[in-house]
Length: 124
Image (spheres, rainbow, N blue to C red):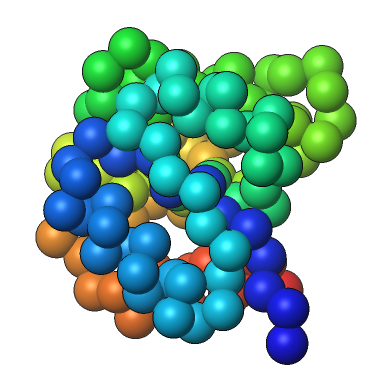
């Protein structure tokens, strides 16, 4: 079964590697970015189906990136699904991310099974 393409953007390299390894093991094709600016570039290159974004990243943070995606004039970009994965756990943080267009908000630390189930629910 062919799985979707996922772009993971997080400046925590250990976490990025862990998510990447687990999703690849499950058959997803992944691309990684260590900041929001790199993620913007990779969106055009890899044409992912879903983005996993940290909120607190250098260059362009996850909230700005989510807004850029959802307001993009290119329909391929604006239709991307977005999961925010953040250590910020306050209700205001979640509300901001969801109002920016995120499909889901998961707080760190998180359970990999929960992340995978959310990905599968969004992509199916």
